[in-house]
Image 1: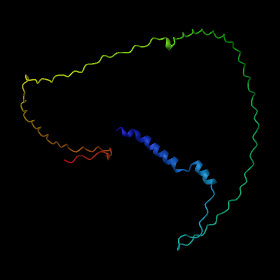
Image 2 (image 1 turned 45 degrees about the horizontal axis):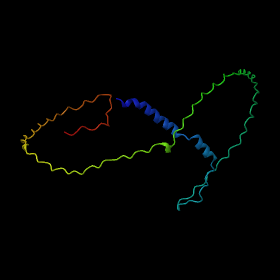
Image 3 (image 1 turned 45 degrees about the vertical axis):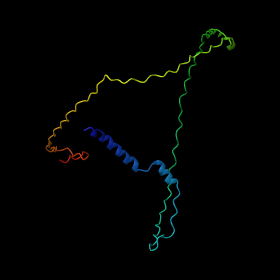
Length: 179
């Protein structure tokens, strides 16, 4: 089956989504710590239900931390001297070849005028009517016999597919057609 090759990847993706999506993110935790707590509502808003007494919140004792130990000074070895790069002299740039001057074109007034093109007039012609063709006899086609009917295909019923032990049933397959 081709669909079972994606099963481990799908299971891993679902597991990662469950693990990573269930915890509180760092930004949400910091926002919750920095946000002031909401003010408790006054009396019971619904008549007939008594207001609940506030539980006593125990105070957290102050804890003194031991002093931070001194960090010893670390001396680093001196940075080695970077050798200087010798100066390189480049050969002189070759001289550019000279571009020849573009010749000047004659002015438009010195050109001869373009002769006018004379189109000869087309005489109006009327064509005689088309003669009727009498040499072709009219032919009638014989009628074709009717198309023979296709014989019916006999119905074949197949025996039910035997179940294979250890292989689960495939619910996504369509049910067999009704006979």
